[in-house]
Image (cartoon, rainbow, N blue to C red; front, side, top):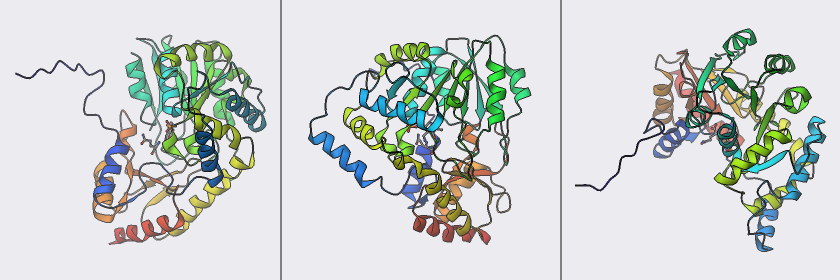
Length: 386
Ligand code: PMP
Ligand code: GLN
């Protein structure tokens, strides 16, 4: 007899996330990976040097719980510079193990069993399981290709006395769209006077194009009083593997966040914090990002001109949504697998980001790639023309 105990899963077991599935398939078939979102180019040599220097100089012991004071100072100055909002470095910021842990801890800290949380789908894949782990009920709002717009009157109707949180994400993964000033003002009106916390996933804050301005909750002082914003150095520094991020909010919410944070990681790695604190003191080290990624988006759209997939041109993030109905009747997961195994380009289907998939024929491709990678992918995708 085996000596195994009951597992009693808290979430449906076997639920491997779509990024892992598609990246594994991409490796198996030697496909060009435009699926999982990560750059195939290096981060700045200056930044690598700073990381190496701090390791060499012995910055290898625990950092303070809420982050290295020098890093929090740098971030506070950066946020004031970019969004015009003064953020107190000691009481309004907590450094986290990537945005994922910031989201998880925020949800654990504020969502209780029975609480309802509104999310906008297609939604980044970690929100739903995190809410479920906290005992909350997910209330999904469906957005659809090509506009992925939100009708806020419908959102207003979804709010009940159990609504505890609304999770927004701008620029939005996986659609590549952004929220405008009007969206944020309407959201502010909806939550004003309620006990609803807005959890704002802003990891792509600098990946915004065509002269658009990122509508951070930090541009809306009243909304900020009941909000938390989440960021990731993985996106800003082209270093997704470092898994370092931070959360910002009013002192009373960050205080509670920290009290939970101390029991799940306590603090995050010290040497990257030292390096980022130095690196981000120079605005030029992040101000180039919108044009840098806009060029990549435009290169992809130029090189894909003859590819029979219809893009929803991204206004933010490093993802673009593509309608493939011209070339296939397959469902999106089957089509993404076909593209990976038969055409040699890995993609991400949209349906895993929905509770109730609308059934449209849409995949997501990532353009955080070298031009030669995008070029090689375009050549392979031309095979779709038949
Ligand atoms: N939110 C969104 C919208 C993302 O796209 C990602 C990662 N790609 C994350 C959160 C998680 O960021 P991190 O890797 O820093 O945990
Ligand atoms: N955020 C990345 C994406 O959207 C992937 C993150 C992950 O693999 N969990 O593609």
